[in-house]
Image 1 (cartoon, rainbow, N blue to C red):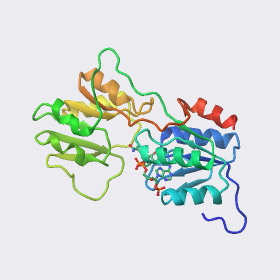
Image 2: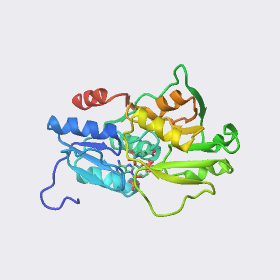
Image 3: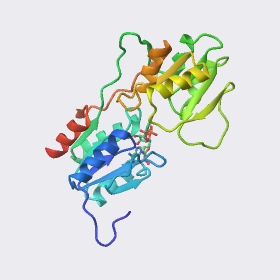
Image 4: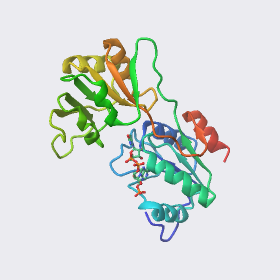
Length: 251
Ligand SMILES: NC(=O)c1ccc[n+]([C@@H]2O[C@H](COP(=O)([O-])OP(=O)(O)OC[C@H]3O[C@@H](n4cnc5c(N)ncnc54)[C@H](OP(=O)(O)O)[C@@H]3O)[C@@H](O)[C@H]2O)c1
């Protein structure tokens, strides 16, 4: 994508890899906004969006700086996952250094409602203290970082992943199960029942799309261990797709 010859001018860089980013990209495409969406290698592109896209890391700080310069980026809208804290911290910091407007889409966190049994955790390692021996645990936290649940030895662990990947389950008692989101509440209830799940571990990503597991847990009276988000960078934040588009419109 290096710009030799005619260099396309992409004024807005949308950092993606989430459903929210896909939604924003689709809206930008429909309005004809001059923008480019970037997703990390292996990240889901979501629904097909009619916006120029690039895939893969930038190659660290220097790579990001060079990319911004080469592509004539004028502003960065960060709609990456709230737990993808490295890319957000770095993008906010480098944009400030380069004098580029930067904004992070920071959708509201999930909060417990009547009937919910939630315990908030800061780190995955804290989970073991709340899980009875021999319990069945459903890790809705993804494959990356599974080893941080190694203190759950003695419990049976299910970890949901979207695509099958090479390699055995990295902990003694557990297995991967496959599933392609979105899941309805009914589907989640049926799955948790079939697997005899006792405890659900979730990252507080927020958003409606993946909330069904929490509604299913409430229906079944399951204990939910909710992992708190890392703090956002010290930068402008918006809480919704609409607010993000307003920010773009005001550039
Ligand atoms: N963490 C999650 O739970 C989660 C869940 C769903 C989706 N995602 C998406 O998956 C991607 C990777 O997540 P992560 O937790 O590994 O991120 P991370 O730890 O914050 O970032 C790791 C590296 O991935 C590259 N990267 C991340 N987002 C990128 C983007 N939008 N475009 C180009 N490069 C990007 C950067 O590589 P370079 O240093 O080479 O530039 C970055 O240094 C994120 O974009 C995120 O939105 C993450």
